[in-house]
Amino acid sequence: DALAKKVGISKMTLHRIETGATAPSIVNLAEISFHLKKPIESLIKEGEPKVVVIREKELNGIMDPESGIKILAPRGLISDRITITSAELDTGLVIHPHTNKGFEWAYLTKGRAVVTVGNKKYELRAGDSIFYDAHFPHSIEIKQKIHYIGLFLSDG
Image (cartoon, rainbow, N blue to C red; front, side, top):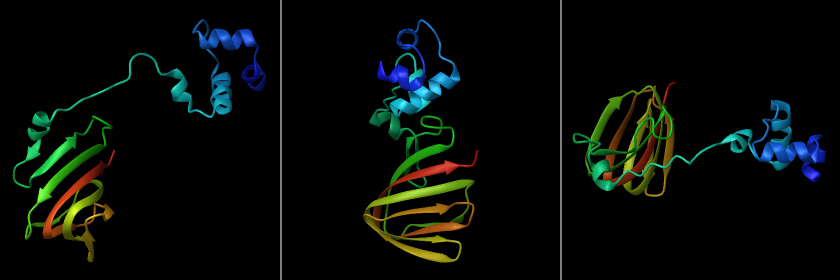
């Protein structure tokens, strides 16, 4: 009753919207969303939630054997622009300067590395994270075996 008053519709109209007997106008939907403090899209979701389980043996199949980088969430799973990766890289490994069309974020769970972006070096230790514009040349030198989780956000 209180929500109907706040939105400016009758209690019966609100009931019909809730039960799917009628579709609200975008104005009423926006008002309901505002007063419930929920995003509009949360009010119009239908059907079953999307759930994807990727088993370990499947993840092992999407690994770059040269770099050892494993794809945990391939592009398109979360978004057409996001890829989530993980890797263990050995001491002494150098990934030479290169560029990518997007942005990168990495979180070190173990080890030490020096990440160079442009002409600036960033020393990272376990527990540190870094975000950078991958359009600029960047490289990585592993000082002590690392394990990291990474996110790549590609350009549209």
